[in-house]
Image (cartoon, rainbow, N blue to C red):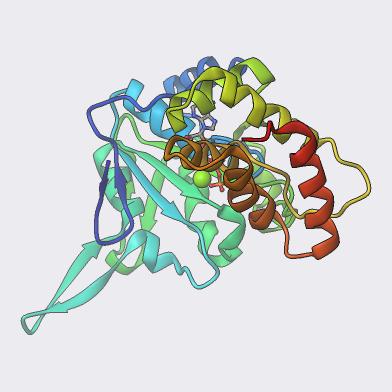
Length: 272
Ligand SMILES: Nc1ncnc2c1ncn2[C@@H]1O[C@H](COP(=O)(O)OP(=O)(O)OP(=O)(O)O)[C@@H](O)[C@H]1O
Ligand SMILES: [Mg+2]
């Protein structure tokens, strides 16, 4: 992957590893085939970004990713006039570039952006497939291959308010969650470079944390967290230290919660 100066991620020639959990690959391909926009939902660290990266590569399309944030303006997406050497020149934003190039445009964390910003994607999300560029007084038709993908974490509810219902209903929604045990073991072993037995212990711990009752966590242990812990183990750290740093301390600052998580770790992880 190449990270350019404006946070755009371009697909590399190598297809990223993505282990499907259900029929998400088929649904995404069918939606892409019809030019239907896709809405990915799922908790943080469950594989949404990786899934889009893999699908763009499999479909042989460029991927342009933008992370939504509250200060984002429509000009950040569409483009703006800039002064260059005394001249005013128009510079396409990442959305306009994707529309012209027939790329996959991935608006990550759409919930973070304000509605007056996300409204610019509306004409791209239905049969019009075009982007009005008001400042140029033109409308850019989407090149074949253009595919709009947005994602959000349903744990942070407000996207339902920030996306118009009429737009939401044009999106094909794909829900991603944490994979079932056998698949998550495979993913963690692959990504962290550890053996399956170690990965299995991490997944057992992850599932135990996910199933914990009575303690308040904003997020549970994600696949990403377990991969981080696995990576520390691959570096030679003991599993307990790795999990304390990458999972327990990362999940919560609350002493009581950390103690409860620590007890779980002690019960599940072998002493080393
Ligand atoms: N099904 C999967 N196949 C392969 N790798 C996966 C899978 N699920 C998760 N991963 C791994 O987990 C890591 C985190 O996933 P990713 O960054 O895609 O999460 P996300 O859902 O986009 O999270 P966020 O909402 O925080 O952006 C990936 O870098 C990848 O290593
Ligand atoms: Mg992501």
